[in-house]
Amino acid sequence: MFSLSKRSDVEPFHAMDVLAEATRRRQAGHPVISMAVGQPSHPAPQAALEAARAALGHGRIGYTDALGTLALRQALSAHYKARHGLSIDPKRIAITTGSSAGFNLAFLTLFDAGDSVAIARPGYPAYRNILAALGLDVVEVPVTEETQFTLTPESLEAAQAATGKRLKGVLLASPANPTGTVTGRAALKALADYCADRSIAFISDEIYHGLTFVGEETSALELTDEAIVINSFSKYYCMTGWRIGWMVLPERLVRPIERVAQSLYISAPELSQIAAEAALSAGAELDVYRESYGRNRDFLMCRLPEIGFRIASPMDGAFYAYVDVSRFTNDSMVFAQKMLAEINVAATPGLDFDPVEGHRAMRFSYAGSNAEIEEATERMTAWLK
Image (cartoon, rainbow, N blue to C red; front, side, top):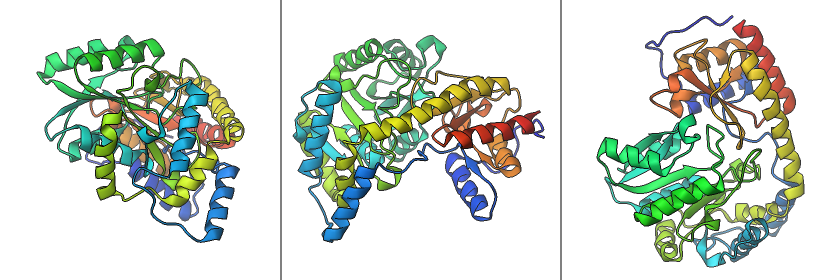
């Protein structure tokens, strides 16, 4: 039975703390179900595994060009042609060590210390943390039902008026983490045009592409050649541990990005690049996994409100439910800690995503198996009664 908790001096409990504690409990024999991390429960596609095994058999895995193998960059160019009808020169594509390296490279290349960059609130906490670590000024712009849970030119104008800061960059994710928001073509174009008119760098995080359930999945590349697009093989392609992603860049940024990448990373792992190239052909297998997430989504959209968790934002894409837990607590960190300790269900406190309002919210990942999601919900139902 969960008892209402008040904000206290309990040690702060963040997303990676949830993951670490869930791992410790699992190793100690507890029946932990994790809905805390955006990690697919499915393995990498068979084609990727077979390509990696074959490469290991040859025994020659080494450095590649800093921007990645030509074969993978050409394969990604073909991917954009097939999926979006776009002709993207492979020379504009940079292979990165996961999307995290892409953000580092973009921020270091585009901005100087002290520059102001807008992100959505709630939003992925690594954006805020990386920007701050690099000495950049983070402008968190609230996204609400009024803004359709996405950044808009009007909300950016309001944020600049309120802070007195002139933006040098805007970062938008669609589908978004944690809200699940899919920013439609018209709204994305309005944002891209706004940035272009004001010489604001526009970074589009598209790592959840392939996982849209409602709405238009539009790449910023369909609207402008000036967007910096960051993507990854971690989510739709189920390759989190392979640490492989990519960027699509305006031609003028290719060489600056390459020079920074050479110094920081040398290159992304060649084995992962080989596997990623093969994964691009595995759409039929991956869409079966996507259907599994869709079943989890449909189940949680009905079940979570029934047990007292109001859905706080659209579940249109990615694989997250962002919910209001204020019926039970006003401290999402304590709530997450107690839920893991008492019923072995891990979820992420909302304060990770929203330092202002997140004490009343939680994020549940539904990237696990259908059986796990149903079992976790039954445990929560009994616990919350």
